[in-house]
Amino acid sequence: MSNESGRTMKELAIRSAHFAAWAAALLLVLPGALRAQQQDPTSSSSSSSQESSSTSTQQPDDQTPMLQPPSTSALDTGQSLQNTGRTSPLKFGHLSLLSFSALYDYDSNFTFSPTNPQPADALALQGLVFYTIGGNRTRLDIQWRPFVLVSQTNSKADFAGQTTDLHTYRYLSARWLLNFDDRFEYAPDNGLLANPSFNPDFTTGLFNREPFLANGESNLINGSTLSLSYQMNQRNTLTFHGNFQYVNQWDNGNNPNPPPAIYDYLYSFGTGVSWTHKLTETREIGASYTYDRQYLADFSSRSQYHSAFFTYSDRIRPTLLLRVAFGPSLQMNQGAQGIGAGNTVTYEGSVEVMKSFRRSNLAFSYGRGHDFQGVITQADHDRYDLSYSWNMGRNWEFSTGAGYIEQGSSQVPVLRGRTLWVNSSYHVNRQWSVFATYMNSAANGGPQPYGTRNLIMAGIRWSWQGERETN
Image (cartoon, rainbow, N blue to C red; front, side, top):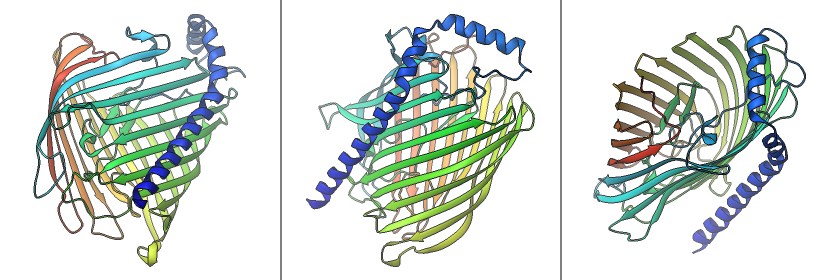
């Protein structure tokens, strides 16, 4: 009873902090956003486009932002929502419905048991609601993505997973840009695999990754990032950032063979600074330093991370992008009762490649770091992701992907996980499509294998931000 009460109090505390962060962001951005909303967006956009076309080689004046505005990525596809919310036909004021799916879901092992798999099927509804306000200098974007299940074992609607995201930015001057993002996610064991864990955006060159080291437990995750960027001149940018993350994991009693208990809670605080230098219009280098401090379980285990990175980004061709970031990391661990204590020097970083063809896209990502990937530990992970999509004519679309991860731990042997997915869609028109998806997830490590899980989903989807080119 005491553990349940402690969990409830901690959840209330993090939700209160989550609400306070959102309230602070709203107070920061709303006055400027409302002023920007009163301006004529047509004249503003036309004048800015004329200025960019006629004075592209000139130094911007004191009123023209030198930094590109940060983009908001859709929670379901990872694609940019820069102008989508303003054009959706299902719109009420600043509130829009961007996508909606109704599907049948078959789960071969919803408890993720290695010895006694229990299948289940259900009807599911999933949507993406988007609220946006502001202009080019100040903007506020809020997303909410619910995932609702109705199954034979539960006649009531089950909010099997939901994610909310607040993203806002504000130009303090032509050279200073303040950016804030906060994401809250509730993912019970029966809602972890509803969407692919890796979504590349070939328009912006950004990657959207989600934790996928499955464990059969429920997750409550909240992460916030605040950054302040300064454009020193046309080629050099300096950015200061701070971040916070909270993770809570628990077994809801449905799994007869839960994974070995490592840690239930994670609190992470960090700060850092980065510098980027543009060599050409398509190539840049940089360096950064980050400091992270993590507290695990009841704060008896804690870690510190000092990491330095050297970065390189190159748009080798219009259809080929390479991005590399690597450097040393000093990790100082202090485990409960001396378990896992000690200092370690290792490396962290990432390699990202994007390649576009005439009708297809290919993306690869490798990353090594200490951020949360599904199981809370004090050690680094190595993660690999691959994604391929192909437009087959005017109506058919095919995509597939895979992910593999090795998660280190000071208390149990190395944890390993994989995820695979295959999706085919038939587009009835630019917005409506029918789809079928197969997903597989497996994990092992510690004293016993965790098991494997297969999902088969088929349904109908309406999507505005995913408008498909027909020529």
